[in-house]
Image (cartoon, rainbow, N blue to C red; front, side, top):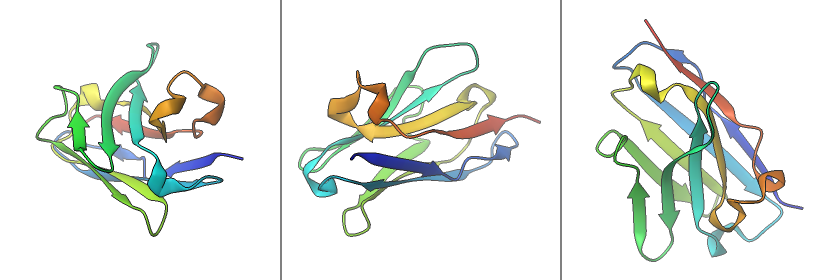
Length: 117
């Protein structure tokens, strides 16, 4: 059974940094692309970043240059380093296998990020 557990969310002031983690189990992690999305309050999910084992990493324009996605296949974990945080980065952050974008039952429970002064 696919299981994903996000952690690392917190309240932070604008300009601050956070590192999110997503621990995966129930599948061969190294075989899958992984995606981060966020859901701002009262809005639908917004794609943030994706890591592809062979071709690299991809970012939404709104986070490019500030966020870095990384994966540790030995630990079955994907990370999202977030720097220079802005209030508009506030939201519930989820990770999942990229193929599960339309299968919310296979997402994690999310970790909350609040950027506010």
